[in-house]
Image (tube, rainbow, N blue to C red):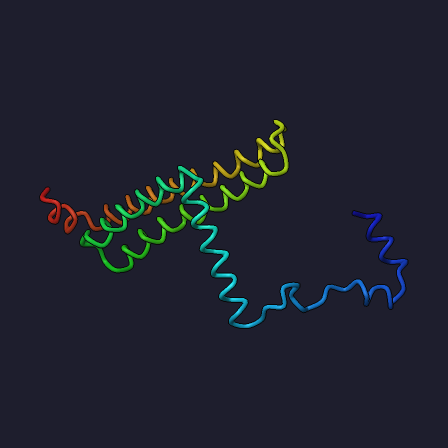
Length: 154
């Protein structure tokens, strides 16, 4: 890293200008074409996660059930927003965790302490997001206990 910095210091201005990153995208897509392409890549990622990741499928299923429950429960709109947002956070973190795992596996299947650490940290992030769901749902429901208990017949 340091040696590459010093090598750059020795380059002439013309060499630096040639090496500068162009503002042009390599695929040449701009504007709406870039947005449409990005949406396609995002959709491909969701499909791949649903197809290859058991945890993602389980979290989507539980998320759909909890989404319906959040809509049904008699809590204020802001409470519903917090509850639903916490569900989306779990899916976001699971997608990032899966990306880390697939990348580590792509690089090598060899057991290495750094690879284990990266995977464990991704798993910990998913766990923290699930704890967040429990806390948010617990707080919103307890703050609105009387209407909720009446709605469920307690």
